[in-house]
Length: 263
Image 1 (tube, helix red, strand yellow):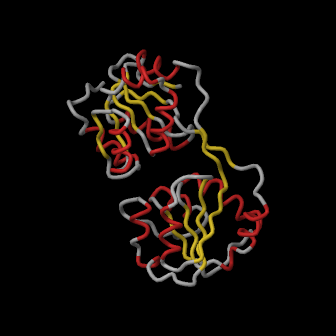
Image 2: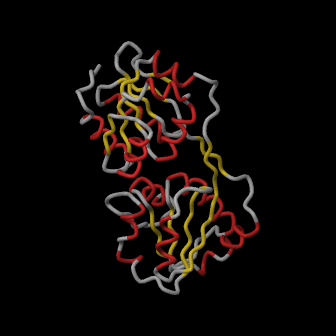
Protein backbone atom coordinates (compact mmCIF):
# COMPACT_ATOMS: atom_id res chain seq x y z
CA UNK A 1 0.00 0.00 0.00
CA UNK A 2 1.48 3.36 -1.07
CA UNK A 3 0.51 6.90 -0.10
CA UNK A 4 1.14 10.26 -1.79
CA UNK A 5 1.29 13.61 0.04
CA UNK A 6 0.82 12.01 3.45
CA UNK A 7 -0.11 15.22 5.27
CA UNK A 8 -3.28 15.97 3.34
CA UNK A 9 -6.83 14.82 4.12
CA UNK A 10 -9.04 13.18 2.99
CA UNK A 11 -7.53 10.53 0.72
CA UNK A 12 -8.66 8.82 -2.48
CA UNK A 13 -8.14 5.06 -2.60
CA UNK A 14 -6.92 3.84 -6.01
CA UNK A 15 -7.75 0.14 -6.39
CA UNK A 16 -6.39 -0.78 -9.83
CA UNK A 17 -4.05 -3.81 -9.99
CA UNK A 18 -0.46 -2.85 -9.19
CA UNK A 19 1.47 -1.65 -12.22
CA UNK A 20 1.65 1.16 -14.74
CA UNK A 21 -2.12 1.72 -14.91
CA UNK A 22 -2.41 2.15 -11.14
CA UNK A 23 0.64 4.40 -11.05
CA UNK A 24 -0.82 6.60 -13.79
CA UNK A 25 -4.16 6.97 -12.00
CA UNK A 26 -2.42 7.77 -8.69
CA UNK A 27 -0.41 10.47 -10.47
CA UNK A 28 -3.57 11.87 -12.07
CA UNK A 29 -5.37 11.96 -8.71
CA UNK A 30 -2.40 13.71 -7.15
CA UNK A 31 -2.14 16.20 -10.04
CA UNK A 32 -5.83 17.01 -9.55
CA UNK A 33 -5.01 18.10 -6.00
CA UNK A 34 -5.99 15.03 -3.99
CA UNK A 35 -3.99 12.62 -1.88
CA UNK A 36 -3.73 9.16 -3.44
CA UNK A 37 -3.53 5.88 -1.54
CA UNK A 38 -2.79 2.79 -3.65
CA UNK A 39 -4.39 -0.44 -2.47
CA UNK A 40 -5.03 -2.94 -5.27
CA UNK A 41 -8.31 -4.83 -4.94
CA UNK A 42 -7.46 -7.12 -7.84
CA UNK A 43 -4.35 -9.09 -8.77
CA UNK A 44 -3.65 -10.17 -12.35
CA UNK A 45 -1.51 -13.21 -13.11
CA UNK A 46 -0.59 -14.34 -16.62
CA UNK A 47 -1.21 -18.05 -17.14
CA UNK A 48 2.11 -19.89 -17.12
CA UNK A 49 0.88 -22.30 -19.78
CA UNK A 50 -2.16 -22.38 -22.03
CA UNK A 51 -4.25 -25.56 -22.13
CA UNK A 52 -4.33 -27.51 -25.39
CA UNK A 53 -7.66 -26.03 -26.52
CA UNK A 54 -6.35 -22.49 -26.05
CA UNK A 55 -3.13 -23.29 -27.93
CA UNK A 56 -5.26 -24.57 -30.82
CA UNK A 57 -7.09 -21.22 -30.93
CA UNK A 58 -3.77 -19.37 -31.12
CA UNK A 59 -2.49 -21.62 -33.90
CA UNK A 60 -5.75 -21.01 -35.80
CA UNK A 61 -5.39 -17.22 -35.53
CA UNK A 62 -5.44 -16.75 -39.31
CA UNK A 63 -8.91 -18.36 -39.43
CA UNK A 64 -10.53 -15.59 -37.35
CA UNK A 65 -12.25 -12.63 -38.98
CA UNK A 66 -12.11 -10.52 -35.80
CA UNK A 67 -10.10 -10.53 -32.58
CA UNK A 68 -11.36 -8.60 -29.53
CA UNK A 69 -9.20 -7.63 -26.55
CA UNK A 70 -11.31 -6.85 -23.51
CA UNK A 71 -8.65 -5.04 -21.45
CA UNK A 72 -5.08 -3.79 -21.28
CA UNK A 73 -4.23 -6.96 -19.36
CA UNK A 74 -5.61 -8.99 -22.26
CA UNK A 75 -3.17 -7.22 -24.58
CA UNK A 76 -0.23 -7.56 -22.18
CA UNK A 77 -0.79 -11.27 -21.61
CA UNK A 78 -2.48 -12.21 -24.88
CA UNK A 79 -0.11 -10.65 -27.39
CA UNK A 80 2.78 -12.52 -25.81
CA UNK A 81 0.93 -15.76 -26.43
CA UNK A 82 -0.03 -14.84 -29.99
CA UNK A 83 3.53 -13.87 -30.86
CA UNK A 84 4.84 -17.17 -29.49
CA UNK A 85 3.22 -18.77 -32.53
CA UNK A 86 2.90 -15.80 -34.88
CA UNK A 87 6.08 -13.66 -34.96
CA UNK A 88 4.41 -12.02 -37.96
CA UNK A 89 0.68 -11.66 -37.37
CA UNK A 90 -1.65 -12.79 -40.17
CA UNK A 91 -3.29 -10.21 -42.41
CA UNK A 92 -7.01 -9.70 -42.91
CA UNK A 93 -8.08 -9.72 -39.26
CA UNK A 94 -10.21 -6.90 -37.84
CA UNK A 95 -8.87 -5.95 -34.41
CA UNK A 96 -11.08 -4.54 -31.65
CA UNK A 97 -10.52 -3.17 -28.15
CA UNK A 98 -13.11 -2.43 -25.48
CA UNK A 99 -11.35 0.81 -24.45
CA UNK A 100 -9.05 3.51 -25.78
CA UNK A 101 -6.17 2.53 -23.48
CA UNK A 102 -6.38 -1.05 -24.75
CA UNK A 103 -6.39 0.19 -28.34
CA UNK A 104 -3.28 2.30 -27.64
CA UNK A 105 -1.48 -0.78 -26.33
CA UNK A 106 -2.30 -2.60 -29.56
CA UNK A 107 -0.85 0.34 -31.52
CA UNK A 108 2.53 -0.60 -30.07
CA UNK A 109 2.22 -3.91 -31.94
CA UNK A 110 1.32 -2.16 -35.18
CA UNK A 111 -2.37 -3.08 -34.87
CA UNK A 112 -5.02 -0.45 -35.53
CA UNK A 113 -7.88 -1.53 -33.32
CA UNK A 114 -11.40 -0.13 -33.35
CA UNK A 115 -12.75 0.90 -29.93
CA UNK A 116 -16.13 2.32 -28.86
CA UNK A 117 -16.36 5.85 -27.48
CA UNK A 118 -18.11 4.70 -24.30
CA UNK A 119 -15.48 2.01 -23.56
CA UNK A 120 -17.94 -0.77 -22.68
CA UNK A 121 -18.79 -4.19 -24.07
CA UNK A 122 -22.20 -2.82 -25.01
CA UNK A 123 -20.56 0.01 -26.93
CA UNK A 124 -18.28 -2.44 -28.71
CA UNK A 125 -21.29 -4.46 -29.82
CA UNK A 126 -22.70 -1.34 -31.49
CA UNK A 127 -19.68 -0.92 -33.79
CA UNK A 128 -20.61 -1.40 -37.47
CA UNK A 129 -18.03 -4.13 -38.09
CA UNK A 130 -19.58 -6.41 -35.48
CA UNK A 131 -23.16 -6.24 -36.73
CA UNK A 132 -23.17 -8.73 -39.63
CA UNK A 133 -20.99 -11.54 -38.27
CA UNK A 134 -23.08 -14.59 -39.13
CA UNK A 135 -20.77 -17.48 -40.00
CA UNK A 136 -17.59 -15.59 -39.07
CA UNK A 137 -15.11 -16.76 -36.47
CA UNK A 138 -14.45 -14.29 -33.64
CA UNK A 139 -11.80 -14.63 -30.93
CA UNK A 140 -12.19 -12.83 -27.58
CA UNK A 141 -8.92 -12.43 -25.65
CA UNK A 142 -9.69 -12.11 -21.95
CA UNK A 143 -9.03 -13.35 -18.44
CA UNK A 144 -10.56 -16.41 -16.85
CA UNK A 145 -14.20 -15.92 -15.87
CA UNK A 146 -15.66 -12.43 -16.10
CA UNK A 147 -18.72 -11.22 -17.96
CA UNK A 148 -20.18 -13.28 -20.79
CA UNK A 149 -22.12 -10.55 -22.63
CA UNK A 150 -19.83 -10.33 -25.67
CA UNK A 151 -19.77 -14.04 -26.38
CA UNK A 152 -23.53 -14.45 -25.90
CA UNK A 153 -24.47 -11.48 -28.09
CA UNK A 154 -22.04 -12.28 -30.92
CA UNK A 155 -23.09 -15.93 -30.86
CA UNK A 156 -26.70 -14.75 -31.07
CA UNK A 157 -25.76 -12.84 -34.22
CA UNK A 158 -24.49 -16.07 -35.76
CA UNK A 159 -20.74 -15.75 -35.14
CA UNK A 160 -18.59 -18.69 -34.11
CA UNK A 161 -17.04 -17.30 -30.95
CA UNK A 162 -14.04 -18.63 -29.06
CA UNK A 163 -12.64 -17.21 -25.82
CA UNK A 164 -8.88 -17.21 -25.21
CA UNK A 165 -8.29 -16.86 -21.47
CA UNK A 166 -4.66 -15.87 -20.96
CA UNK A 167 -4.63 -14.56 -17.38
CA UNK A 168 -6.41 -15.03 -14.09
CA UNK A 169 -7.74 -12.45 -11.65
CA UNK A 170 -7.71 -12.97 -7.91
CA UNK A 171 -8.55 -11.11 -4.76
CA UNK A 172 -5.42 -9.87 -2.94
CA UNK A 173 -4.49 -11.69 0.24
CA UNK A 174 -4.73 -9.18 3.09
CA UNK A 175 -4.73 -9.88 6.80
CA UNK A 176 -8.11 -9.69 8.53
CA UNK A 177 -8.92 -6.05 9.25
CA UNK A 178 -6.05 -4.71 7.13
CA UNK A 179 -8.21 -2.94 4.56
CA UNK A 180 -10.45 -1.39 7.20
CA UNK A 181 -7.36 -0.17 9.05
CA UNK A 182 -6.05 1.47 5.88
CA UNK A 183 -9.38 3.21 5.28
CA UNK A 184 -9.37 4.55 8.83
CA UNK A 185 -5.72 5.46 9.25
CA UNK A 186 -5.43 7.09 5.84
CA UNK A 187 -8.74 8.95 6.29
CA UNK A 188 -9.94 7.66 2.93
CA UNK A 189 -12.88 9.71 1.68
CA UNK A 190 -13.45 8.15 -1.75
CA UNK A 191 -12.75 4.74 -3.28
CA UNK A 192 -12.21 4.52 -7.05
CA UNK A 193 -13.44 1.15 -8.36
CA UNK A 194 -12.71 0.11 -11.94
CA UNK A 195 -14.94 -2.96 -12.10
CA UNK A 196 -17.64 -5.00 -10.45
CA UNK A 197 -14.97 -7.50 -9.47
CA UNK A 198 -13.15 -4.76 -7.56
CA UNK A 199 -16.37 -4.05 -5.66
CA UNK A 200 -16.82 -7.77 -4.93
CA UNK A 201 -13.28 -7.98 -3.55
CA UNK A 202 -13.81 -4.84 -1.46
CA UNK A 203 -16.73 -6.61 0.21
CA UNK A 204 -14.69 -9.80 0.59
CA UNK A 205 -11.90 -7.93 2.37
CA UNK A 206 -14.23 -6.13 4.78
CA UNK A 207 -16.13 -7.98 7.48
CA UNK A 208 -19.91 -7.38 7.58
CA UNK A 209 -19.49 -5.00 10.51
CA UNK A 210 -16.69 -3.14 8.72
CA UNK A 211 -18.84 -2.80 5.61
CA UNK A 212 -21.57 -1.27 7.77
CA UNK A 213 -19.05 1.15 9.27
CA UNK A 214 -17.92 2.31 5.85
CA UNK A 215 -21.24 2.40 3.96
CA UNK A 216 -21.21 6.21 4.13
CA UNK A 217 -17.96 6.25 2.18
CA UNK A 218 -18.15 7.64 -1.33
CA UNK A 219 -17.56 5.23 -4.21
CA UNK A 220 -16.76 6.09 -7.81
CA UNK A 221 -17.75 3.21 -10.11
CA UNK A 222 -17.39 2.69 -13.89
CA UNK A 223 -20.96 1.82 -14.89
CA UNK A 224 -24.60 1.79 -13.88
CA UNK A 225 -24.37 -1.98 -13.45
CA UNK A 226 -21.66 -1.64 -10.80
CA UNK A 227 -23.53 1.30 -9.22
CA UNK A 228 -26.55 -0.96 -8.70
CA UNK A 229 -24.33 -3.63 -7.15
CA UNK A 230 -22.83 -1.05 -4.78
CA UNK A 231 -26.27 0.22 -3.77
CA UNK A 232 -27.43 -3.36 -3.17
CA UNK A 233 -24.39 -3.83 -0.90
CA UNK A 234 -25.51 -0.88 1.23
CA UNK A 235 -23.28 1.94 -0.02
CA UNK A 236 -25.28 5.16 0.04
CA UNK A 237 -23.01 7.59 -1.84
CA UNK A 238 -22.17 6.19 -5.28
CA UNK A 239 -21.08 8.29 -8.25
CA UNK A 240 -21.13 6.64 -11.69
CA UNK A 241 -18.30 7.56 -14.07
CA UNK A 242 -18.77 7.49 -17.84
CA UNK A 243 -16.36 4.53 -17.98
CA UNK A 244 -13.28 3.14 -16.24
CA UNK A 245 -10.72 5.45 -17.86
CA UNK A 246 -8.56 7.75 -15.75
CA UNK A 247 -10.20 10.85 -17.23
CA UNK A 248 -13.72 9.59 -16.50
CA UNK A 249 -12.78 8.56 -12.96
CA UNK A 250 -11.36 12.03 -12.27
CA UNK A 251 -14.44 13.78 -13.66
CA UNK A 252 -16.64 11.66 -11.42
CA UNK A 253 -14.35 12.32 -8.44
CA UNK A 254 -14.90 16.05 -8.85
CA UNK A 255 -18.66 15.47 -8.67
CA UNK A 256 -18.72 13.36 -5.52
CA UNK A 257 -21.44 14.45 -3.06
CA UNK A 258 -20.11 17.28 -0.90
CA UNK A 259 -16.89 18.66 -2.24
CA UNK A 260 -13.75 16.85 -1.16
CA UNK A 261 -11.04 18.79 0.60
CA UNK A 262 -8.04 19.14 -1.69
CA UNK A 263 -4.39 19.43 -0.85
